[in-house]
Image 1 (cartoon, rainbow, N blue to C red):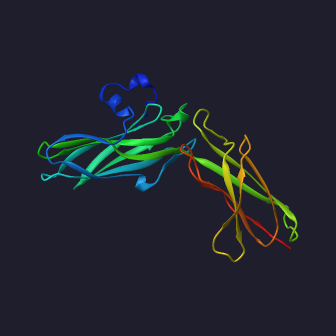
Image 2: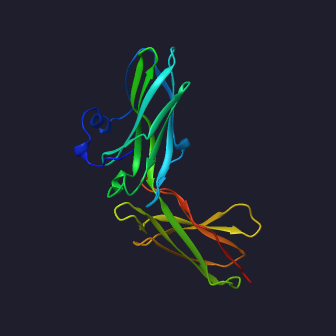
Image 3: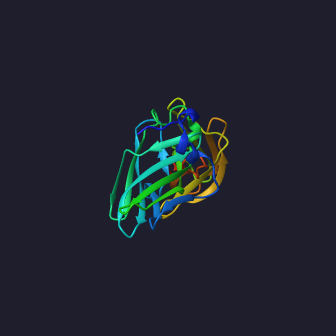
Length: 246
């Protein structure tokens, strides 16, 4: 599978599928119908800077004669196109396998992150068919990383502690993680013995993605940062840093 990120290589019927349209558009013949489309088990497709990401798209369909086969393609921003490695049909479910390698399929194309769409063609065994553009939308996102460091350690109760960290995200232009600046990130605390984190405050990352917050030490517990994500970047929560309060 290869992803094409140049307008010049998207022509004919494929180019029509890339054009922005407000909703799903369908064409077909007979009683073939698509009943459900699922991408990556319902989760976002998150891609880092190295290593291939594999995921599947399943299309459930029906036809009185049975389902003969299907073609499933994916289209996204910046003229993104993904073709399946392999598509198989069993009963009324067709499954397409996809592999995304950031150094091959996403190279120099950060603009490909965002909302993508499934274009599905399903054939019935009697010659009927259904072709649906934008049968399903999903997110293909840039992976993010987040760190947390609470200090000093140990600290006396009532004293000020500093919780530092950094938010970075995958850059497909140079295959490294770079600071994601000006983003709002939640500082959270899990008191020793408690079952869930509470949000203490929201911190704005610097232009380089650096995070810094000061709070009063009140009890033993774990500190972490949590980022909700954006339209192009995945959610991420840092590992916890336990602080001993004397």
